[in-house]
Length: 193
Image 1 (cartoon, rainbow, N blue to C red):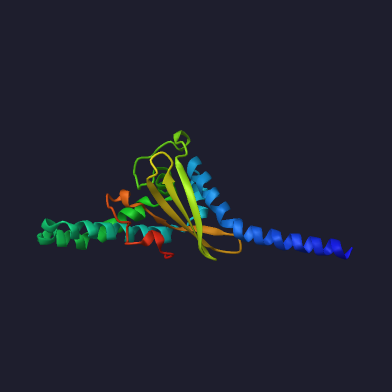
Image 2 (tube, rainbow, N blue to C red):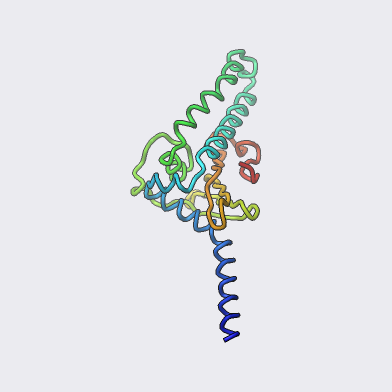
């Protein structure tokens, strides 16, 4: 009887550890399925929209600043400086309007922020994923196109309970901005929100 109790306790501990370690993989799978099927309610449950919005605002603002600073004609133009002051407000409003469960599904399907709605059922899976823990409470899934091997978005999940995870950041690839460097310097490699 004692051996059975020890075996049950050991199996329980192994199951709890497996559940703890495997939970972000399940969360990423659930988000993928919700994006493919266009299930906006499920996407909303699996994401922290305010955190994602703030991350995208900072990435797009940084990409815009890099483009403005890289062009010598723009740096000397006084209207460019005015545009640089107004741009964050406009970017913020656009991100607030666009980053919805449907917008998240579009980013995950196309790898870029697009306003064109597409039929989720018509999209074939084209991303392969590489995943890694960034700590006990952070997990990243890097996507890349299976056909061209181009970098796709990197999804950062954060633990919100024992086995509950939420998507808190989407690091867009450099080609989403037409840049060579990743947005926000090495934001894709940083475990930050």
